[in-house]
Image (cartoon, rainbow, N blue to C red):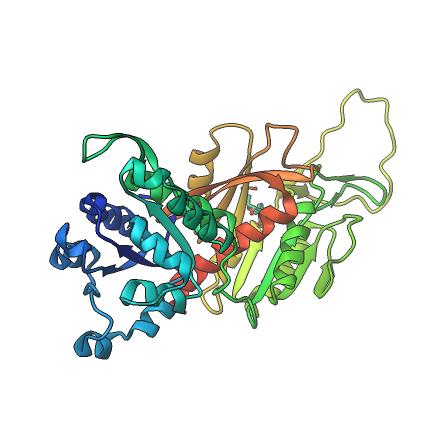
Length: 410
Ligand code: C5P
């Protein structure tokens, strides 16, 4: 199972509707994607599902009461509200929705909603006529204005026999909405302050003689976008750049190199002082066995054979460092078998994460302003959709930091 919700602390509020029986499944689906889940069960919710069931599936004690001394001693209500970074109420009854729209705090669930800075989601669930009621519609509109994310409801047959809008969205639909939100939004609780990151970018150039070289079409835009985004987020950024005309992003320390060997040296030095290393450069795989000291002259021969030798694999040597090894992230630019090849590189180069990049589409990748990648790490993978490289850089960094913090147990 992809750990799309790794590092997420999700508080689930379960209120009193028949759909509460699906909440246990929702907890499981969230947990199996890596989230830590805690549950608040309202008084009326307890008529539909027991605290014990939700405790068993979440692995955490279920909170039911605002003024329970033993629960407050374990994790007080304000602490619980602060603990969460995502707060879902599913099912959210018409009554709970009305209370939230008014800002009431007369039980544990509503109190925690007022006391939290978490992203708030509600999955309304009620009889179709109650849902249609103008009061409910106004309350939902108010919550929408208050930046709650509203998931559903779905239409169909209801427990009471009516047919219409008002069924709670299925757990997998709710999970999909949360995953979409998480993939799109950088995590505000994860901070880059004080984290050093080294990034390689652009092509390398391998000299043939004093006037000619072998290189590739890499523009350096993706690596520069990552450096710019990391610096904006407060990281301490070293950008090791192959030959490119791109300007240095604000706040970034830039080291210019030409050849793969120069990039290798610069990368090993920078990696020693970096917590995270991202190899975004398109490094030439081979260089001339010997660079001619003087310009090669055209001869009468129809063929010219160049003898080349393999360049060092920069990212693999960073990942192989026995001391001060940074969390190491590579890129895999492929035209086919994208995921399989990227996974093979993740393991052969011993990387912590790889950004698989389909370069067969001329609208993205090399030289384009846009790109799409699939992030792959040993326990999971996540597709990030095509978008401007600057926006994609922020999303990549969010997930890099998340995995880095998990691995480093920060
Ligand atoms: O093996 P391949 O070139 O496809 O792997 C791509 C990844 O490896 C990129 O992260 C790239 O920056 C890195 N790489 C490297 N040194 C090389 C070749 C690739 O760091 N000589």
